[in-house]
Amino acid sequence: MSQFSQDFQADLRDLMCWRRDVRRFRTDPVDEALLRDCLATFALAPSVGLSEPWRVVRVQSPAARAAALTNFTAANATALDGYKGEKARLYSGLKLSGMREAPVQLAIFCDEATGKGAGLGAATMPEMRRYSVVAAITQFWLFARARGLGLGWVSILDPARLCQDLDIPDDWALVAYLCVGWPEQECATPELELAGWERRRQDVPVETR
Amino acid sequence: MSQFSQDFQADLRDLMCWRRDVRRFRTDPVDEALLRDCLATFALAPSVGLSEPWRVVRVQSPAARAAALTNFTAANATALDGYKGEKARLYSGLKLSGMREAPVQLAIFCDEATGKGAGLGAATMPEMRRYSVVAAITQFWLFARARGLGLGWVSILDPARLCQDLDIPDDWALVAYLCVGWPEQECATPELELAGWERRRQDVPVETR
Image (cartoon, one colour):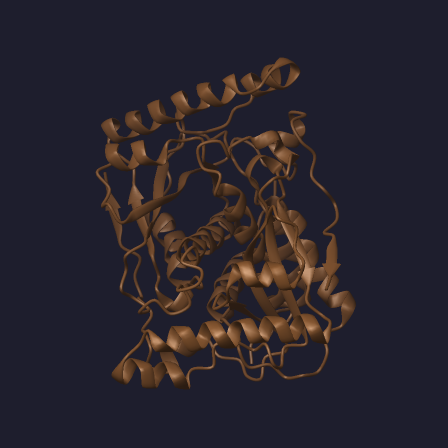
């Protein structure tokens, strides 16, 4: 019987408040043992049929990083074109990735063709494999944050282009591009809220059937 | 500056080990205030562009529960037909949902048409909205587990049929059907591993580019 203390429960809630998308990193390196400890939480994540479809690729070489950054820059310029007036002005001032500074960058994929788990639970909802990868990323995010690291999830990318540039197997689907490092500052308020882009709701409405 | 203690970090890792898919529930009720506390973690979840696209529907009425159970039973029978020999024998012996016993059942949707966040971050990867919902579910799962509750995620369902039966708005996509309650027993080993269906990997391989 595992029991978690009230102090732990309160700290866990604090951690969820503090776990913010981080886009501003100091450039000092992340210790490899610390990174391994954090990555080990992937193996503890829930996965449909125990398929464990997460595939982790560290984007490390200057060429791979440059390709990813070029990809983001182009996608971000296209996204900016989709806004007008005040929203365009706001968007152009947002810092939406830490890809120039983050010492650790990880591309996380879902192996859509894994035989592990023999397809259990994924027949009617094959997207469950990708959802399993997201659950693993969320656990990694929380654990890394508890160790003081910040994480930013970049989604302003052309996935097909990134897969091609990084020479990723055909059956792997991009789920996330993660920037990891030491945050410049700690803040519990989402940066998009500070920048006036959007506000967080305080409540969670529940409908009943 | 938020600091988390080494004790907290160790407990968090334990929590991730203990956070297992639970399919065997006691039938005693879950306190409403406790459920609200756990659901409040949705509001702390990361979401693309601060779009907060999660929509929570409590499946409570006998008619709604019966429709969901019928849906699962049919999908599970179809899934069983897809296995042969030893795998079919194993599959037929698995308990794959707690829908008959779980006192709280929640269907979690993604509002694909929300204007919140003005589409930021979802242009190249619109699936990020559904991934945001999965991250919220993962946080809820961990927090509920820290409070002693068990959670099981049922994906052996026809999503279109469930949306129709529960009269769900057209723009909402089913992400998860969650069974919540007090677990019959506590176990850190996945039930699918105990049943001999699949084994968990111990490592997290990382490729480099």
